[in-house]
Image 1 (cartoon, rainbow, N blue to C red):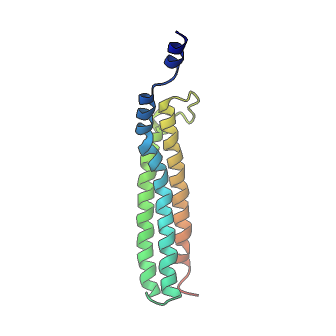
Image 2: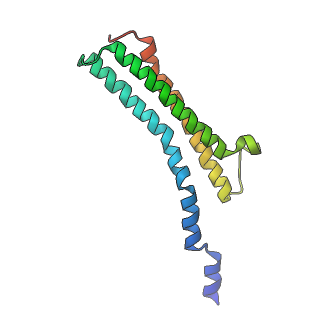
Image 3: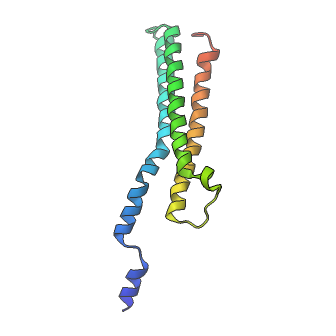
Length: 139
C-alpha cells in the first residue's frame, strides 16, 4: 500500500514528456532572435573586412548590401518579438507576473524571455549597423 501512495504522488513519465514536448518550440524560439543578431554581426564584419582589408568588394556595394541585410534582420527580429509577445499574453491578461508556477505560466515566461531577447537582439543589430551609416568608407 505504501508503494502505491508514492507512485500516485509523482507525475507519470508520459505527462512529463508531453509537457516538455509542448514547450519545445518555445525553447527554440528563445534562440532565434540572438541567432539572427549573431549572423548579422558575422556578415557585417566579414563583408567589411573583405572590402577594406582584401579590397575584393567595393565599399559602396558592401554598405548597400549590409543596409538591406540589417533591415531584413530587424524585420525578422520584430516578427519573432511579436510572436513572443503574443505567447507572453501580457497585453491580453495584463499580468506581468505568474507566481503560481503552472504549466501555462511557464509557457508565458518563455514568451517573456523570448520577447526580451528579441529587444536586446534588435538593439544589437542597430549598434552593429551604425558604423555602416556613420563611417563613409574604409579608414
